[in-house]
Length: 256
Ligand SMILES: [Ca+2]
Ligand SMILES: [Ca+2]
Image 1 (spheres, rainbow, N blue to C red):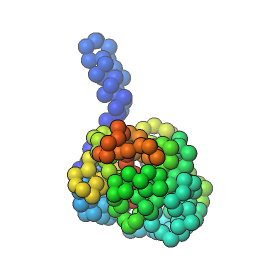
Image 2: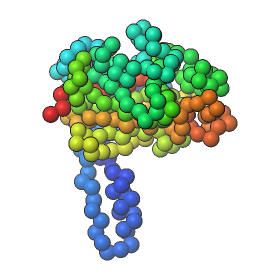
Image 3: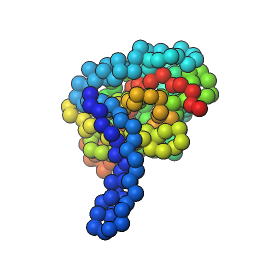
Image 4: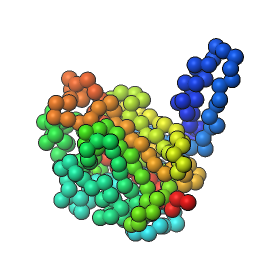
């Protein structure tokens, strides 16, 4: 575990652009100090480290809990009627299961898949490994999605102190990222997932703060969306395809 202060990319760009003139560039104030945990290869120990940092699991218990964490592994039987289709409900994890998570995407939907997305494209067989058996998740028609937080079981906007995510098949550096946003829409920082280091191909990235200040997380998966004619860069394609598995986040508390 290491503690670092996120640096706004825009601030770096502004400073670089102005380094040869005498105009003092405005500098974005440093964000709050974050604890960042990353892993690739055998990620299990680091995933557990982040779980322990957030506290005990609150499962799908409705209502705000004092502390602890929530986790989505996509594997529960309740999701079965929606699996392997392109219309997985964006609010499933705060209605059917009351975990305080809702999703948006600029694509056309979401897909929770039990067969390695082979019905999307047969070349994906063996491409994406799961962390928790056996379902893995992707937006449809986009490689980007946002997770927003609500009080568990209620349509009340919420904030969380930490967010972690397991990625599958990260091939390119600095393309698979999470960007965290505060309630006022300001960016808290952008963090990159480590590139896969073994045949299993899993990467873990987690960020936590001392206080619940994360209102939204933008998740960018590689450089392209899954598609019938889109192969991964490791399989003759031109884009890095990445999907996701477990999402782990601190208990959502009401945003005021
Ligand atoms: Ca899973
Ligand atoms: Ca890939």
